[in-house]
Length: 544
Image (cartoon, rainbow, N blue to C red; front, side):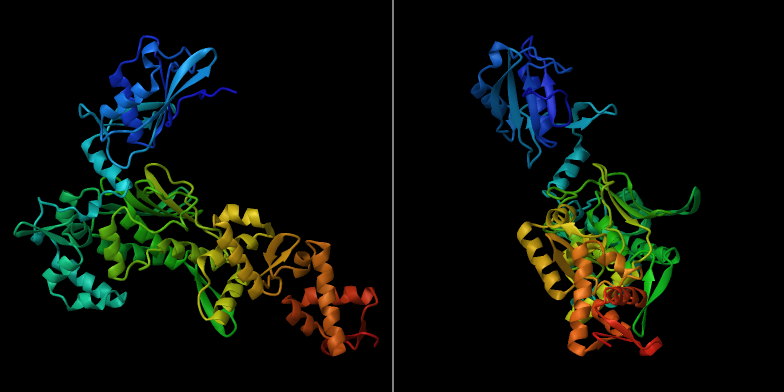
């Protein structure tokens, strides 16, 4: 097996060195790697992967590393090695991903991208892309930037009235309501001073800017709401309004396209919307707060037959990926904008709005929210349209009532996995991406509370806690051990009381009347108990 990869990709570049590749080309390739995701540069390999060998002048790995460091700004420290393959030597240069924007000593800034055919290329990084890159790295808060072409009059007084109303209704920071308009603008970073003059910030214009000036100064602040039924477009509206107004419009639009049903829980009737209102709210907040406002694209909400999609321009910010969405420390592409949403009460104040998005689906036994369609250009949240699992929802509600608080997101994630059937520890971890020590503690707590149980190294929901409408006997018969344990539990109760009724078995195992009858009939056939009486007065005794 060769050491050199067979094909080029975003992280791999081949360079022919038969005619001694120029230093400029080497440095430019390194700069492009550093400004993207890092990668490996191979000198002495043709574009088709054929190894032709490195030039004699490039065999000095120390000299190559020093040349690159001297001709990049800031200096890029690479690792260079000579590889021996197919009778030829190849210079391998490992380039780290940079936390800053790197250029050649001549001031040339490049980045890598994939062409339509999947092959990579190095292209210039344009000025507007520099802010995008710094924002992705968490090195620039675009929302905090002063807009010098704007003035205080570009902030809409009517939007300030809307803002104060939202703070009151959403229980934001009450101290903000005591401030006059200028003090409020300063407290929320809507404005910043430059010398003796106040200028609106990007965040200020986005939140309460006049609509006409917002279109002119921040043309990227566009959002759309669509409703699609099959191939028919029922609604397709685009907005260039300040975020507070857009947020209210989207919430009202969603109410019209989010039907509810009710489930009975004791004497209560619990409304269950098609899509969780808290999930939609937090998903919308994330789309507005974490989007890339330098990209001329829009936040898009689409209600379709399959489900709800919320997409926002820009990739995940540095350090966030599909595997650690729920475990990474909360941070934002636009910290000032995110802080405003928290302080006025529209966003989760802990910064863990992602937990609310997942919780809104899990508590009704629905599939987990899905971010897998996200790309390098968009973050896309998909919430599947699905009927609630009433039994699962009742189990969660009963447990939260018992402990007097909501279950943790980690507990909900594990229960969601077990809802689909029994699973091993490793299978649970592969789905929820929780560290081993923490996952052990979560599962241990669920077992102790009676929500889950362990059998032969696998975990499942406890049949007593999970009262499915389907035949619980089928659930118990997943293994012979489980079925016998149900019988043993009934027999133990019969010995303690001297007799059992169908109601006793229903209460003991948390199952329905038909399932209880089947278990008791099985015990009668085996001769363990005898049926005494009939109808509602029927009892099962050991020796009638």
